[in-house]
Image 1 (cartoon, rainbow, N blue to C red):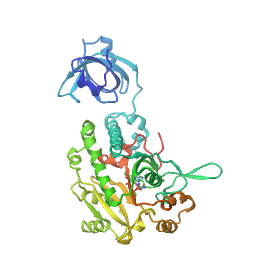
Image 2 (cartoon, rainbow, N blue to C red):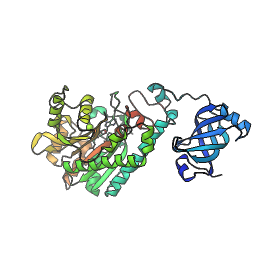
Image 3 (cartoon, helix red, strand yellow):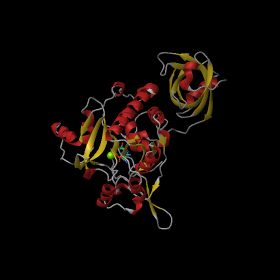
Image 4 (cartoon, helix red, strand yellow):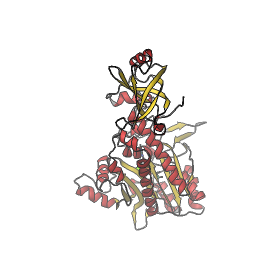
Length: 432
Ligand code: 4AD
Ligand code: MG
């Protein structure tokens, strides 16, 4: 008998097939069991009628608990009322391993309980849907950059110095009294890559010892960082806009069923089309004040400010560019029209998703970069290689970083981004 995955039922209408999976749920009505079977690709309804299977099989189906692993056989039948459009008229069921009393019932549990059982929680319909969307977004990202001639550059996880501020560094013991830090961003290495290869991107985990317990913060998350030689601030805003549109379109096209399972408002995503509005930091400040929010001129934005800005433009992400230099990183290029500002940009997403992208044009002037490193009291020795990039054929260059889990939180409509990574790492949580 042919083993078939549930997502492929459409190609097997009328055929008797085998499905290998787990019992997700069961309802019984007299002489019929409705068995929800999941196989990792989707969930299908299997209908078992007494008389169509041996009596002991019918009784086994009545007895086994949720998440028992089973191999079932049955005929695929198109049925508009069935979830997924097909049901399986069961002719056989074989138990592979009976599950003990399953801790995660199909009704509500608190977040702590679910996070402690993350290894099992991943089997739930919505969680599996998020993981499939995560896979899709990862593929869309690789296709996007590959299609534009970028080279994927894998940057190190152990680094000798900070990239995004010294307060969020995880320190680790390296050999012989040496200290190393888990990388906060691959950007500085991506800059070296861009000067070698023109257009590069990194795609990997980064670490922030962030003591914030918000719904948008993880201590380990994945970032995608393109870096382009001879690009300026406008060029990378354009790149970021094309990039985000591509990701959203690809998920809408290929993972519609997952978005339905997640009860995501699809019209909100369909409205994500270029161009995205672009405003300066000063304009953003004025807008916040006009909207009645408390915001001191020159201060960084907090969560409520980001949420308000993300809602202010008809559900479209907004670029906020040209920031006060005090609140941005040392490597951002000063604005030639106003030295109090840097050519940085954040893209703030709608639906409460917050800052999805942070980027900038980079300081390409040797002396200005040195003075910024000294002002921030960063260890100059550890940055010599980075400063070299300004000594040997410096060029204007720019790039940005997109947070994968924040982007997924937005696309999947999740309140907390911890659901958007298989095993989240947060303040006070490292199990399982
Ligand atoms: O704004 P950030 O800190 O920028 C950088 O790291 C730059 N080096 C990127 C670059 O220019 N190449 O981080 C970039 C993005 C944020 O916009 C956000 O989406 C995400 O990373 N991010 C986090 N996601 C989850 N948890 C956290 N603690 C995050 N911190 C930042
Ligand atoms: Mg940022």
